[in-house]
Length: 285
Image (cartoon, rainbow, N blue to C red; front, side, top):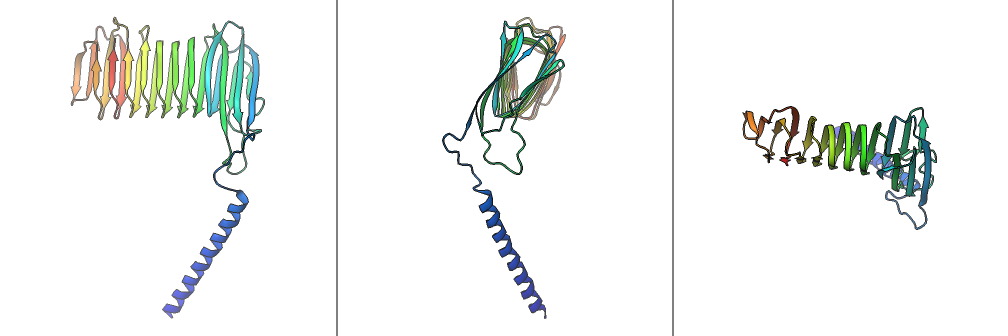
């Protein structure tokens, strides 16, 4: 009796497997191949521009996927948003940039597609032209896209990215909040308060003026700080498997093991705090 029941169970299981494979074959045939084959000419050329009056603009918010962002200061009195490149047809809505009150929102992300779409292709660049005197807020969130900026002085810079880096020159911000996964952060000619978090990303900050606090947290990323020769600050460094090196003479206030320490340079008026799992700290002049 036991053998008979076992045979029935085995037959039922085999039948279910056959039915499952058959259904999978039907669904696979209907859905097409899993990897897309883009034929020549199947991509759509994107070249769209939106212009906004900047008098009342207090915040610019940008969200993108597979799109590099260039923030470009101009002598114009308007904010101009120029999106160009190639994409799967009808993927990006025409009204990707809008102004609502004192806020300009730019959303360059694929429109919602039913089910799973393996044919999505984006090869885009977004140029955002802002008046040189614009000093308000800039927030950008990217996936597989870099942010480049120069010659700006902002109240707030907020940047968050996955597989994208930030590179800025001659850039001031009263407060900068930066976060990346698999992306480096690099700012030269900088002045301002800064907090950053990176996973598998290096942080390089070159200060032209330093009278601020710096808080950096990294996982598998090195931190390099280049400060003016007359900089005075307190420093706290915590790491699991990294090391620290400084061109400044640090008076060590506390030491825990070989890798964790706290100390001061000069008056210690400003604060440098760096935490890392497996990253090094370099403080250079």
